[in-house]
Image: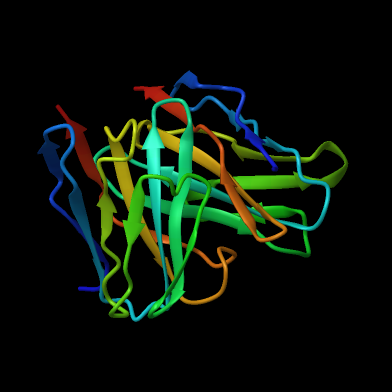
Length: 114
Length: 111
């Protein structure tokens, strides 16, 4: 059953701690993306990766880091430098290219920083 | 940077009513346009897209959208909504290698 998985669904962390959100896809897609969704603001791009071992910053990369060591995996680390980390995080992937292909989304992870 | 505006934050309709959700963008060059939908408890998924050709695009579940270049708009329409159309709808615009999503419109269809 092909798709994108994100884990966990809900995540709670204390302020000042780094936390890593998982994103895995078995669609054989080259490109992967991380978005942040806040009420009334739609989706904002954090980081994207068009190919393994390569990634670029999106609009709101500050306080986040990513890695792309495997085609299937694109974990996102929310660092203590991120000023307002509580949000809903969505991972997506697409066949190839830069954002103009259909993106397939995961179920999301809701992060709450206490 | 370009922006995408969805003017309606929450729309409430009765079943069989017609729907039109507005989407306007600011980029003046060539654009690719998308509508995504998120049903309650489900993943965000593509409803329809426009890259080129006929500006009237048909998508899944009876939805369509019209690209009007002169108005920088890509409004989503459905002639008769169903209770199952209750969801959040996001317009997205890609121009000059920059992808932007609108804030979303929540649609509630009353049975």
